[in-house]
Each structure stands twice: as structure tokens, then as C-alpha cells.
Image 1: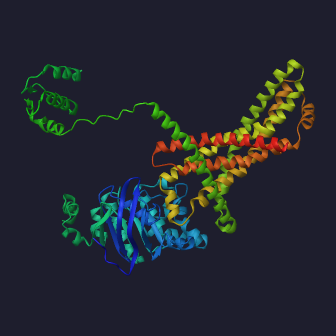
Image 2: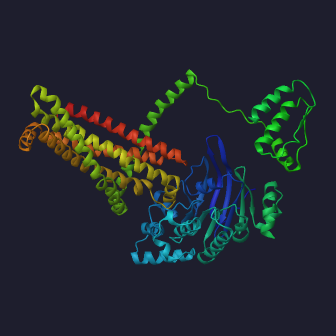
Length: 257
Length: 347
């Protein structure tokens, strides 16, 4: 299905093809993410959800197509423009990707130190504030990533992604590996942050709860294309066999009651 | 045991059709047993006539049904060794050497660009990180480097005295020790030890960062991994190796001198006098001038290998090994190139 053009799209993906060897992972894919929404991005395992995320943020080279983030074509942009875009987004990797040689405090302060010239005192205070936003106590600040639980790693990674008050946040399976209560808290957290900070969130997920409680809009990836995009109601009304299975399966019924 | 019995039973069937397998005596059954029954059933089945299983206890019928859906195991690919296959392997390996050299030159270029950028914008220089790595590769390496070079100095001296004594030329051991240690052994030994000690550490560190997506995270935050991770490490190595080579030279001469004194009867005063005559400052500078170049080679090899690590632990191990092997290889190649160069300009 062709996406309608939105003038306020924060990410615009057009005709993007990504190929590894002879396997085509993304095939002329189009996607828009609107400003201020939480977009849930779903699809079968191995469909290329993470690949699309990594292509948008420039870690995976694309064969053809065009990606604009904040109205900037990242391929055509010079280094300074690219940096200014990178300053405005935050990324939560699937495994957290915290710098293992740095403490929680240093991890969160790392991007800030690079872009802003502020005193150590302000850095520390902001760090504690960010930890508070993601629901962590200031006591964890001196711990190393190896001393944190899985859920805490994700929270710290989110705090680091939020360190520079980004306008756009990418979350790659933020709730995978968390217990249901932790996952629920995380959804709530994303929702709250989106309201208070006016974030746009691009969330790759498998978690039906997250889709149901946190997301404004859902996009579904299949066979290298977006097979559907719309609200939860649209998804449930869809006739596509995979969507029917996904949104009307046993687990879906349990979530939606 | 059971498997052999089943195999024998398979032969019994011959061409009889419509066989039934009686398992009513079976009181316990696991997946292995169920599969053996199924295998027997399949071998008895001919064409459309299926053999039947009788007397199966109700507890296990679902297990046997489950096994029935299993298709025959796919045959394993057995690799056959052919002449063309071996030639192909050799060809690929040779082509791989050029790939390695290209990757090293690529990294050298990237590092030079990054250093140029840091030179123009000194605020981007990672002083803390550089000092940290300097401590790791230089300060903490001092004891082991001094110990090993000291021992090697002792051994060279002892061997020299042992063999020179037959000609009554004991004192020439000082010449040999001085030239050998200052020109070649000192720096070469230190470089090889640093390749094993710090080169492997760099590869493992960068490799595990790569595996944990830390390098991707850096990139998406707008940092250049070469500037943040590789430049401080390389710089630390380039500063550390001449210092360590100098300490190694001194330790080796000291060890050689001690052995000459106690084993060869050359007292320290005579040793020093002879050393002053035997060597010139050139020998010393020739040795030390090689050190930073070898450090750069070790560092670049280690970083290229570190960034080449893929997602698996095996890949990390392979690249760490190859970092050390290639590092030592290129150190020796560089030493040879320097030897030719110095011979050509007559030092």
C-alpha cells in the first residue's frame, strides 16, 4: 500500500532497497513517520525490521532509494549537517549497547560532553534527572553496565538516548527480555516521555501489549515491504492473512480481552 | 544394542507385505525408542501398503504420532577433497593477502585523516583515553619487558662467551652484545611482545565492542570510532614502544654485562670501556627509529582485525589470533625493510 505523503513527516523513506549478497531484505520500501507519534513497527522474525532501523540511521548501506530524516537527505548531507541530525535523535539498541568500559554516569554524560559545553555539576544534575525519568535511582550512577540487570541496562540505554533531549527516538525491541510488569512499566514510560518531551518514537517490537498500550500507529513489514500501516483498529480490520493471525491469534485475544 | 536388533529385524521382512509390529510388551518408551519403531515400520512399508503398529499403550500413542511426522534426516554434506578444491583454496588465500594489505592501507588512510581532523580541532583529542591506554601498554608492560630483555641479554652474553672462549676472544662478546641488542634484538623482541600483549588486547576490546553494538552506538551519536577509539590507542602504542625498546636495550645490556662479569670474568669497567669502543650512537638510533613504525604497524593490524570481528565468539578468537600473527609477521617484514634501507644508506 502506498503511504499518503504527510507534510509533517519526520522520517521519509522512499523506494529503499537493501540487499545482502543475493537476499533482498527490503524491496522498494516506503514509510513515513509523523511528528509526535509513536509508531510501532512489527513483522515476522527475520523480516528486516532491525535492518530498516539500521538503514535509516545509516549503519546499513542501501542499494537504492532515499531516506530523509528531519527533511535532510542523509546521503547528500555534509558532515556538519549529518552531525546536527545525529544530535537530534537518540537510539536504544536491542542489547542496550552501553559502553562497557564506562560507568552509568559516564555513559549518560558521554554524548552531552561532546555537544555541549557545560560544567561537571550541571552534567551530574542532568544525569540524575535523566535517570529519574527512566525510573532509576541515582545510586546506580557509579555502576558499570556489567553490574546491571537486563531491565536496568535498557533503562540506562534509554536515559543515554534521551541525554541530549532528542526529538526522535528509535527503540529496537525495548521490551524484549523484560518480565511483563517491567515491560508494562517501560511502555508507560515511553508514553509519558512522549507526552512530556514531545518525542517522536519509532519502536520495533514484537510485544502486542506495547502495540496496544503505547503505539499511535502501527506499520507492518512483510516480504521487504510495508504491507499495512494504520491504527490498531485498521490492523484488526485488515484481511491480510499474516495480520489476521497476528492480531487475532490466541495471544492477541488475551491482550485485548 | 536396541538399534542393532532393530536393524536385524529390518532385514527379516524380506518382501513380505502387510507386516504388523507388536509393541504390546513395551512398558516404557522415549523419543529414541519411538523413532526406532517408526524406522522399522517405514522399512516394512512397501509402496502403498503400510506396516501397522499394534498394542501401543495409549500413553505413548501421541509420541509415536509425533515421530511419524518426522521426515527422513537430510544427508549431511560431506566435503570431498579434490585437487581443484585445494588449488581454489590456495588461490583464495593468496587473494586474501592482498585484501589484508588493502585493509591495512585503508585503515592507515582513515587514521591519518582522523589525526588531521584532530590536529585542526584539538578539542576533539581524547587525552584521558590516550593516557589510560599509555598506562596499559607502557607503564604496566615495563616489568615483563625488562625481565625478558634482561634474560635474553644474559643468554646472548653466556653463549657468546662460551663459544668465543675457544678462540681466546672473550672480550668480543661485548661487541656482539652491543650491536645485536641495540640494532636488532632489543626493539624486535619488544615489538613482538607488545604485539602479543597489547595488539591482542586492542583486537579483543574493539571486537567485543563491535559485537555489543557499542561501535554502532558511537556512530549514531555522531562520533567517529576512529577518532574516539583507534587514534588514542595507536598514539599510546607509538609513544610506548620507543620507551619500552629503550628500557629493553638497557636491561639487555645490563644482563649481558652481569653474565660477562660473573661467567666470563670481564669486570664492569672493562665491559663499559669495550662497549664505548664497540658501538656508536648510530647503532642505538637505528634501533629506536624502528620502534614507532613497528608500533604503528602493530596498532593498525590490531584495529583492523578488531573491527572485522563478526557476531560470534569464535570470530573474536580467530581475529585476535590473526591480529597477533599478522602483527608479528609485519613487524619482522618492517625490520627487514629497515635493514635493507640502512644498508643502502650505509649506517
